[in-house]
Length: 402
Image (cartoon, rainbow, N blue to C red; front, side, top):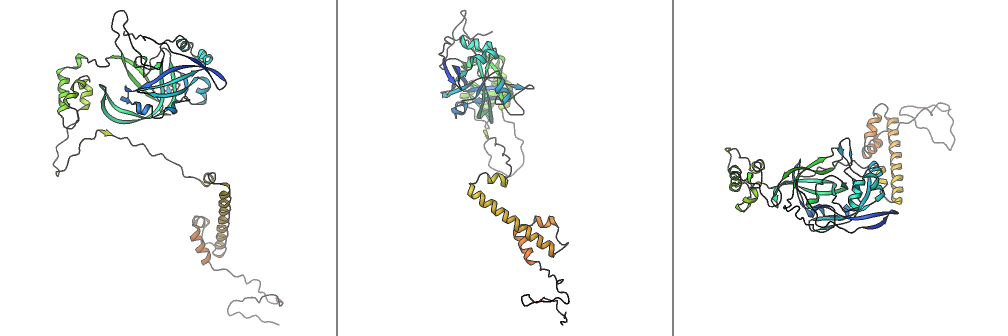
């Protein structure tokens, strides 16, 4: 088994007060730029995305191993996890070149209760891996980065937590330059007279189906890394595939890319070769160059229509009073007009029809309804005085007066 030895893993610690408690502050490198291969294919993590907003990493909880529920990874920002599993916070995050550096503020007493192994590693400055729990988007792009093939780029990081991994290897492992360690470049040295060779691993990306949280961890496959090439990959078959890729006009590979392409597996090379198009008899047209970048458009966010109650919460008090008064007057006018229409045009319009009408239509209908005159008060023998108005009788009706 290949062994890694840190030439100098000493780092400075200090004690700070936060929220009325004392915290042990230690340095950490959370992530470095590079290609990480997972179940969704090799993915490139760029420094420009990792450090686009360094302040968003500050304050995220620190836990021991990634929190999970029913076998699925979940966010650490839930009452249950924060109450039972949090051992600290992340602060003072910055991007230094290709490294995302920060500080871990740890509650020693809480960490000792949850993971004595992790506390021992930190106090004795034994290499300790970490792993970031983040939400991110995937941009489908196929290319090569520093000799490593990738099929997508991680974008729009939304930090959720940082996990300490005692006894485990993180996505950005200790050998990759991550972990609880001094915030400076590390070196490896020989052990037992043999050259220390780096050992890479395949990342398994496990996505939590309910929250969309992504956690990365390593599953060793003993593959080569760096500038080394496996001789078994440089077979005539693979060289033929590489030559075909370079000669294919639908790719952008050149002769200078041949050495890097020879490091790829036969299966991956075969996927890079564009499928042959069927020859169809069509009208001549200008062929478009094959698209290299495929942009994944985000799904539109569904928003619920705003209610009057929600709207009134957003306006000033004086305007709110005017709006409420206007609404009351509007409602009273509608009620009065509907009552007038129902009284003068019985059994013509239903309540549902009238309620469904807009104010303009309802007003026009109310004005067009003839007013019904009540003649029941004009009975024979009714006396009048000088102050009363003369009753109005229907045309053709004469009343005998005495």
